[in-house]
Length: 152
Image (cartoon, rainbow, N blue to C red):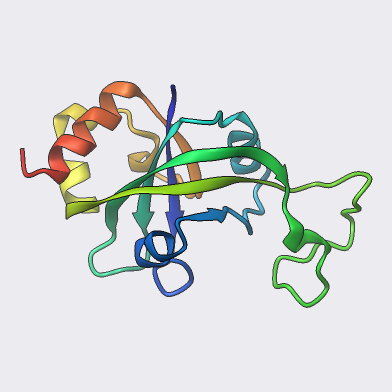
């Protein structure tokens, strides 16, 4: 099983929303590299949820991949902010997996703590200029973040 980190703004879709819904299609990703990561996700993979543009920004919980990525329905909806006129049902451009809520962390692991942790050296999230909303996370980094969420 792999581990991934997905970013979301809590006012758009938060850990509270995922907990309430149980599962959700992870729609709206419009970056080709992030899209390719979504297509690599396998059922059962771990997903760290990161609240961006929050006080504080940080990792707030865990999900898992419940269903492989399929076409993102928002690309076909002209009323959606994620509509893509160049996409068609025969040749979709954007994909989304279904993410399942697993648990909320006892405490948020803020970005500052992630940056300060020597165990997280090389984490893509912390690289200068990294703005991807979906990134792979090594097993060692995933374990370190989960441990930090427990206050260890």
